[in-house]
View 1: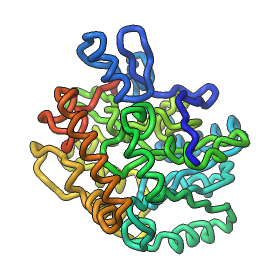
View 2: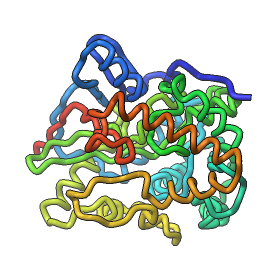
View 3: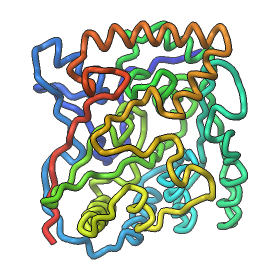
Length: 355
């Protein structure tokens, strides 16, 4: 049973990123773009902290700002659920939430099986991440419930047959068999109970050579419609966290050594000894080569899983048909006009580093 969730559910006092088209607000890129076409508007605006600001180098270090964020979460949230993938972003959040005694009531893991259950399509199974997670909990002598929310073949098949009506929910982050917390909440509506706040590990800012920083919507995996969510690293109530990241990127760029991986090493994001330490799914490529999600390893594994069964093959066929039509109708919003590349990213308001 899937229960459609058509409206944004908010975390009190947290500034959620959003789009605007003329005078309307959206939390779905696909709906914002559809509205642009409907009214003849050129492009949706994207906002994270709404207004541009100037920032000196924070008095708090990055590590101190993380503790501040943990305290903020503990003080303002009734129940806390962390979505943990095993990657370095959610790995840092988990490690510090445990280290700083942050409120943490559940660790959530979701896996995707578009064709059939197996033990290698998902990173969680492929890299045997359950012992990794248990070792982190053991390190801090903590016991936190771990819950799995699996998206199964029948779920993907349901969405594949109704994508035209899923522009608010399922169809946001491109990739036939990708999904976000919004989809999990529709399949497992119990995650909306008990005032839980869902913590996510996105997103890294971009920094220009003239010391401006901003976010693209793609850095958040376009998950703005996710219910009751908070982005750990992007909180207007604790700007020091994101600003420290921006200064770190600026410093590394001045040394001509910046990559996202270098930034995470520089800021002591923990590693867990698996291929996720180095973002195994993407291939190093020149900066002028466009990203194509269709050939990323994670997506290829999901496609291969789908095509092993009749229900998965039907879902795949439905996705292709819808994507081809959607690309034709909204071509200008995709990189080089191809839905198999990615959305063209929307850029937030600009902020300035003044130290």
